[in-house]
Structures are given as structure tokens and as C-alpha cells.
Length: 163
Image (cartoon, rainbow, N blue to C red; front, side):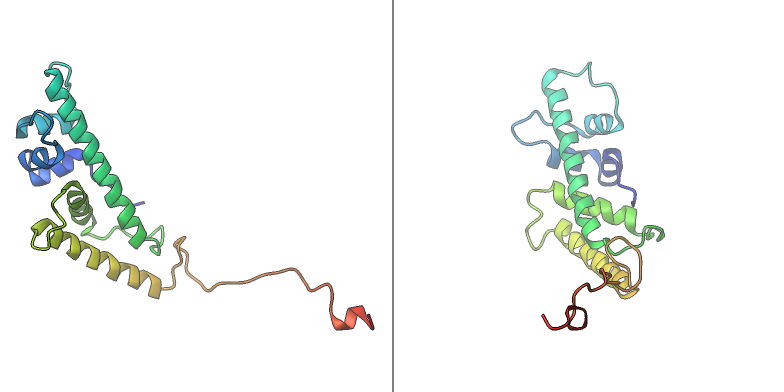
């Protein structure tokens, strides 16, 4: 299993302001960068006002959901990867890009930088999947050809005689 990023990883990489802007809906009290970073670090939120605490918890839930969707998508492309294969050096950056894409509501725009980076990651994952499949790996990660086994035949023309 390849390592997944934490919420703090996304906040550190893309900045608390950007993540707070996309993770907290307009119906909640907005969070500033320092608040988003504190929430992602796991700091104690009990001293925060109720509306800010609610916004922070909601933002963290959205981050976790985006990370989960990114993981599911990446696992689809990595289904042929052997379990003992080394982690590609670009994996930590790419899984964060996938999570960021899933966090954005407006990422579907073709001219979006987030979408362009997402498409680059998908191309890399497809290439890796094709390499793994060519090496002969199957969905469980083990290589080799399929072997079909069955019970020996009980009835034949020879054993049934003239029936």
C-alpha cells in the first residue's frame, strides 16, 4: 500500500489560505490561513468560537474525503503493481495533486491549472499501469500466466460404452 498524504501535508504544500478557501463552503464562517493550519495540525479547537470550530471540522472532513477519492482513483491505476514494488519517487507529489483536484469544485474547467496538473498525474499513472501490465502482473500484483484447473472427466464415450 502506498502512503497517503495527511491534511497537514496538503495545507503545507498549497498554503492554508488556498485550502481554507476551497475546503470551507460559503455558508460557513471563513477561516484564515493560520486557523486552517492549526486545524490540520490537530491543535485543540475547544477554545475556538463554535462557528469557526464547525467550519474547521467541516474543512478537515472535506480534505479527508478528497484524499480518500484520490487514493481510490490511484489504486485503480496501480492495481497491476506488485505489492513489493518500490514507491515511485513522484508518488507523494502526485497523490497530493489528485487530492487537490478532488477538493476543488471548479477544477473541471479545461483551462484550470489544477485540472492540467491532474491530467498530467493521470497520464503518469496510466503509463505506470501499462508498464506493470506488460511485466505480467495481475490485479493481485503477482506475475505469471493464468492456470486453469478442473476435475478429471468422469464420463466419456469410452467409459459409458454403448449407452
